[in-house]
Image (cartoon, rainbow, N blue to C red; front, side):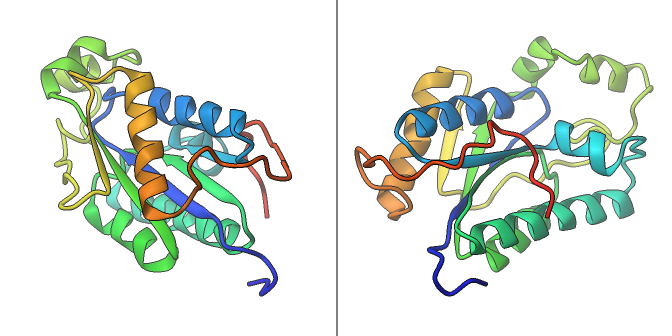
Length: 197
């Protein structure tokens, strides 16, 4: 770690597939950017295209994939970069590992009833799971372990994307990760692109 660098924070949006993690994470990143706070967005779908272009979604592959996500987030935050992660991460262990390794860490539970996730289903994953085409979908083929004590819980059945993103920002302010009405800081925007170390 560069001792001169102020550590960044990491926020992990977790929830069932189609719960609204990505849209809420993107919305929050946009608001942060408007306030002059630079963030790197790790969306699991985008990361998988690079790290596991032909994913098989076994336990071993998931362990490896989320291990890499934590590794990248840890090293970026140690270098003063703020990271937002949008990833189901079905096992609590994955998120707990991030919490253990990242000094400023917050878990956001995007809580959405399964019925609403199924109704949204923009990628057709729940339908494929019902037809037996996907056997390892969290919440259908394999268990999704809800966070036991997330810093922020958003009920997306009752909360809009914008309101949810603002609630997360309020949580980050309460944790001291960002200042209220954050002053402009030097920006190193990467427009949500993946940074390779």
